[in-house]
Image (cartoon, rainbow, N blue to C red):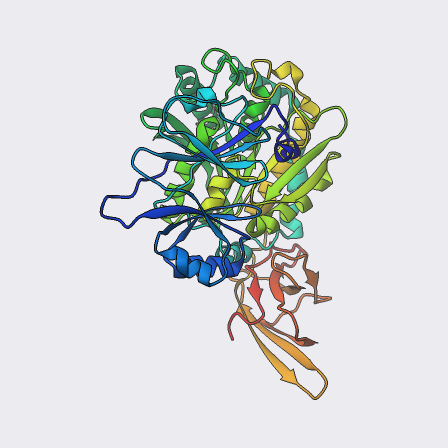
Length: 546
């Protein structure tokens, strides 16, 4: 189903977001789930000062946990706050998206819903079988009250900015050759193979067999790959599959391409072919692995196929949470979910991000659009937390989701089969995605990118104006180069404008008398005797070393 379909919450669609919630211990003070709106910086500061924490950011509000004692202080500061639930032993909490006025049929157990914003509800339940009372289709994701939601930060965005400034002309020349290798026939074959498992509903033997197939495909391609088992929803079991193309310059830094391989339907235990949702995205990750495996990049490329997305994003939540605990340097995540049903009226791929990932959506569009005729649309909306990208948002990583912008009438049904798909559209999506992933990972360049870029700025004031001068220094390249080019931008990640007509041999540069009312960002390239230009250096802000 397309992004805009899910925004509209059509009458047939029930969208879920779930997370298992840790119940407070008996010795802990009473904790509440609060709706705080709007999600302003002032509200966040007040919440933190009151000992509370964000559980989930939405478009119009924050869902937060806080002690009962925090309520008077929050209200005294003018924060709009309402209690929506009281966590307790045995309770699980979910976000439910539904256009229906009564989205849950009556049944056993203590199960309640509370509207948070248009089309999005908070559901709490003690009934493990509550899914049978929901109208198909639905999705699930975790709300973690145990403090495992660091969320995105400006600092994390700044780190990504330094590492992902851009690809130089010499390295960029390799990308068209890689894009040209994307095969519609291979995509169809992989989608068909995944469909032939009959169902890939997580917890079934067929889903586990599909995971084994993905693992073996990665290994046949020649990649190091591993299975990462996890438990979810109580006693259920499944596994994620990860393969890595090691980076040549900074292998500890990773660009991650991911998709979920599990499926669901109106007869999920018997027949859930899931060709579009999400054999199409899984086949895309396998195709990226096939084409990129033999190439060299500055950064590592992770190729991740996760399970239990349809149960509640459990596989990606498991991976992202562990990555954050391990301090993994994931600098960008490209999640592909339903990329093969464009509909009859338009050929559009929605590229979804939150405000901390907008630079990544821009980068995807800039890298991918030149290779495709379909339209790439940027959508920035923190409420669109229904696919695996949001597990990475929750852990502070920059992530986007690429998804078709159309109504798929076969969504979450036994009729979601390969013969309903547009493989030409899927091929173009994979081309755009491959170009973006390769651009982010930076094909290995000759010469090497400059290192050690440092910046300081100085503002001069006069009676009627103020001017800023920026002074740059960097380390000389270890290899012989004829000089360096200096680039400037007025926002992080560019676009950058070259300031040097010819390469300069020195390792310093002064950018003088600029308007003082905004920050400036700089990168370098090195140029060798054959005129080849390196990838960009790490980005610096003008006042970074003041």
